[in-house]
Image (spheres, rainbow, N blue to C red):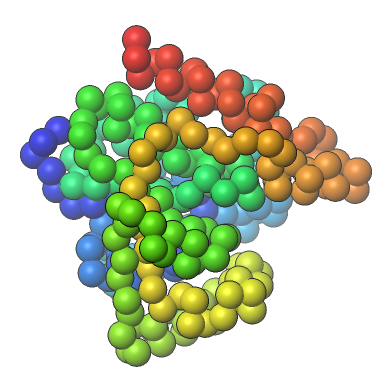
Length: 246
């Protein structure tokens, strides 16, 4: 990354996250990078849904596009595979965006939080002053409203209806869609807000929600190990940070 900036860059953890920024993507036409294929614990990838959406809306997929399965992403965290993350950060650093937008750190899913770390490390590795922004993935989409250093886009009726229509189309394969709309209401997704990231190394504190979920799934014999913020995410953050300042 350097001062000769181009299109915005969007880096998300899973396919269909882009739905949350439907209006912004239609307007900004970012290059969209997606870390995983969205297969979860099945073998069914969702990356084609994102590819179709980008074609229809006129945005471009990036070089990182379903690079890892979800299982591989979780394994990378549990195995402290910092070389993999550094490679992804360097790949993003070779881009030339006007801004970088990524999933927010919410403590809900460790791969979401990892995306912000990788994106921040990419900017640091490039020695760039390109701004980094985050958006709410599972928290209230209005969480960042009223805060300083934000960018907001209010969707008109047509754009809002198009966003909701696509959400309904995705609901069968992405159960979170119906859950989020039920929780925050359709009106909550009319405004899309990006918040400036001032410290990409901030991963939150205390027990994360994904730890509790992991404990439940280990108890139910779905997972073998629990991903923990202090034990797994923090060391990966530290490894990226060391590389960026060396």
